[in-house]
Length: 247
Length: 221
Image 1 (spheres, rainbow over the protein chains, first blue to last red):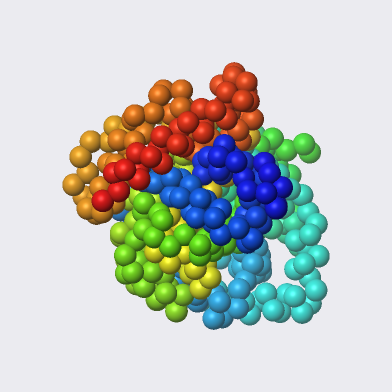
Image 2 (image 1 turned 135 degrees about the horizontal axis):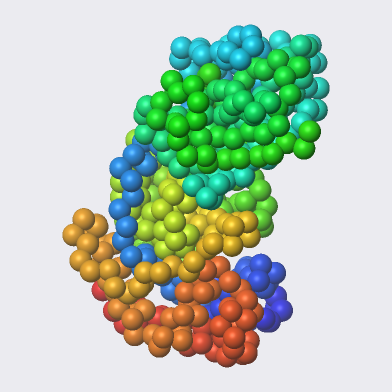
């Protein structure tokens, strides 16, 4: 690579076109362009080769719902911009704060209601200075994908709140579910599997859920299975995520 | 139990990707290549991006309908994984939406979009290889795609010309291009992967570039 004041040689131009230069080398070339009209033309021709390669991939039809997913994300983002952005964990935790007792979790009727309530509760929680302290502490457990879902992973955060503990699960890389299938979190307590709740996944196999559990119930392991419906009371489907707890 | 889809982690992941990429993939392309690209698009693509910058989601939908297939095909070729490619394409169109206001690559909308896809796909590929060690090189033959009646005529013509040019490379040159451009390896990483001296790798890449450029310029309508 030549210095900024010298024109790059042909080999460097070729490597630039094929994006084979290091970021520093590339920056050096692009800095040179500001002072050299001749090299701008050379590199524009070179860039055209890289541009052309971009359409050479064998054509594969995208899934029919991808357009709708993109538009949903963009429209949701626009709504959030209008109403103020909320961090995902604040939404989850705030939803939990309005949640039911014991093993039961709160199900809100619509996404809008959920968002509005969560935002209101978030403000309240922040005002009390409670939520931040709770979410910064607690125990974090990482679940790994099993042979049935090697790309999957999840994090479970368990934070104590009074006589209860809040379980927050965020997962990614899980296979898509087809209604009425759901993913089900199970907690192993003294050899018994207890339900931790169900969730579904969206783009990228991402999903999240929250549950409250009594503070005095110890559990030794947790796992997620793919269940035929939310109605199952014991695991019937394949295990996709698993973790042993150290204590 | 309340099913909830997480919101911010993808955004955080994107921020990390940006850091890994050393910049924002939506950074506008330079303005210095008017009419030079083999993929130069009609004004209407630029018009769509202008409407996107004004918040018109229908313009984004139209951009997707025109170029979603090309974007997805590129993402699949690089990641080798349909689910990962879906995520990449979704991410890329959202970034295009966010970056529309800074778009300056007039006449080069499709390359601008596909470069976003490529950079995100390469990043996904690197991430998966690092974490899972399961990433394979694109398995499909880049030059044999058959007839694509559903593709836009202009895009199809360009694709046919590019594949013809690629097919006339030597196997060694084609492999070097694939490792570097579709595999995201640097020249020295490619040399190691191919078990050849760095100078040989550079020579193959230069020869491939010269050949592609001359073929594409000779065939330009």
